[in-house]
Image (tube, rainbow, N blue to C red; front, side, top):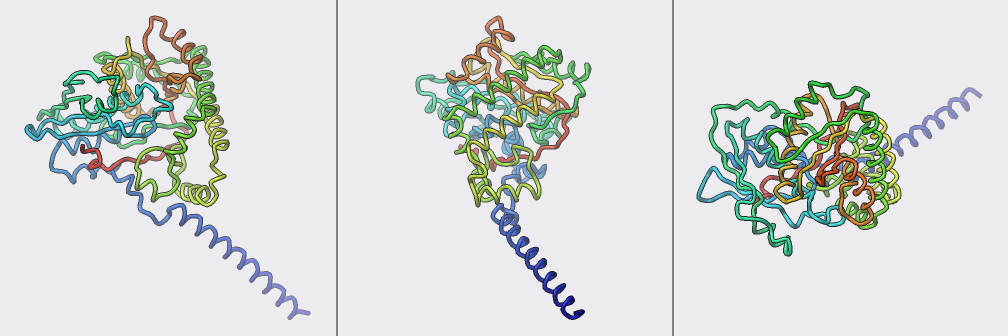
Length: 399
């Protein structure tokens, strides 16, 4: 009997070991498919040493400016180095990186030009240069042929000048993730923090207002929720997001822009696990699942947001859009220097037909004199650190 019991125990142990071994093999396969052993080249620009590979200071500042937040992480930038002046470069919008479904007027693309410029200024100062921006130095776009005009007409002429000052308060913030979609702590932005952030608009071509009253928080939460719901029901937006989502490390290394699981705060082991699972079974990340995740994420976020901010301009010219982007970039950097995080929640500001009702409603309430609200942003203190997201190699920006 004792021998039989021992044999039985051995059989059980062998069976358990086989199951565990089999699960281990399956897990390894999933993680491998998810890119566990693929180097994340798309994160290289986040290294502080990345810009140092270039001798040309224009390339150095561009290499750090591309860390700026951009609409749907499209990074719609082209740079051209002036061959006759080693201190000058030009910034162009890249018409191959537009998102026409959710940005039919290319307003968000122009905001992204501004964020690039704001990051470039901080990078330049750290390297010992002041920078000046001449917006649309060759004149305005031809709006009837915008794509061609974007290729031909620079958004900005950027001039670097050697400076005695290298103090850059926000330089460290360049290397922090720019968007945090998590629920925030209840702690509101302090009066001193609010005042410091508000001062950023003083020399800007845009206005910044920070809100903390319960009435406003409830209104912005409702706008954020409604905007997310409408966007998830807009078929063209869904198809656009699907086209820009990359689920493997290899795809992310190839594209280096758009969306990935990091955008929802996923990192480490879970990143590879989820990427492997949705690559093996795409139904796990179908449109219905993605819509529910977006709606649930927004609901959780707006329920835990102590402050919102609006950035607006008197009109809606391309120059004003770029100026609003510069202000947002400065705002984003300084907020992180103050220990705060933010998330654009601007779906209700998008200009496609199904968004018209909340678009008109938020302007009626918060832009009664005809201003254009360029950005609506959650602001607070994070409960969860968000990972860095894909960035292009700076050489790919050269046009």
